[in-house]
Length: 211
Ligand code: SF4
Image (cartoon, rainbow, N blue to C red; front, side, top):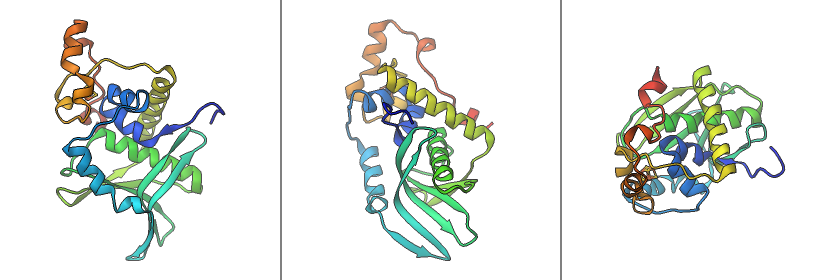
C-alpha cells in the first residue's frame, strides 16, 4: 500500500457496486443518512460487531475480525470468519432481506477472501452470505471470474476516491431503496443536467455477474 494511500474500505466496494455515486457521497463527501434498510442492517450487524469468539460444531467463529490487504490496499472487517477443523477458512456475511444473488454482496465477500488469503497464507475458496429475512444461506465460490471482477471493482473504487469525482445519479430502481435519496436528488439532477437514461451509469447486472 502506498504511504499516502489510506486504503479502500471493504464496505466501499459494496457501495460502489450498488451505485458509484452512493460510494462517492459516503466515502468522499462523508454523507450518510439512515432509512429502514440501513437501520435493519445495523441491527443485524450488532451482534457480529461485538467481536468475540465462539465454538460451534467443530469450528471456531471469529466475529468482527479486522481484515486488510497490503497488496490491494484494503481495510475493514468481516462479520464472521469460520475456521474449520480441516484447516479451511471461510468468511460469512450477514445481510438483511431474502436470499438472492446480488453482485455487490459477492464482490464484498470475495474482497474479504483476498484479505484473508494474504493475512493467513492459505487459500480461501468459498464463503457464504446469510440472509436474515429468509433465514437462508447462499454459498459463494471465489472463482477466477469473481476474483477478477473484485480486483477491477477495487481499482475503480480507488480511482474514484483519489479523484474525488462524484459520478452522475443512476436514477433508476436502486434509488427507491437508497438511504441517500434525499441528499442525492437523482431525478432533479438528471433533469437539470439534461441526461437521458443512456448517459447514466449502469453497473453489470446480477445476471451478468452470474454468467
Ligand atoms: S439515490 Fe440513486 S443515484 Fe443517488 S446515491 Fe442512491 S442509488 Fe445512487
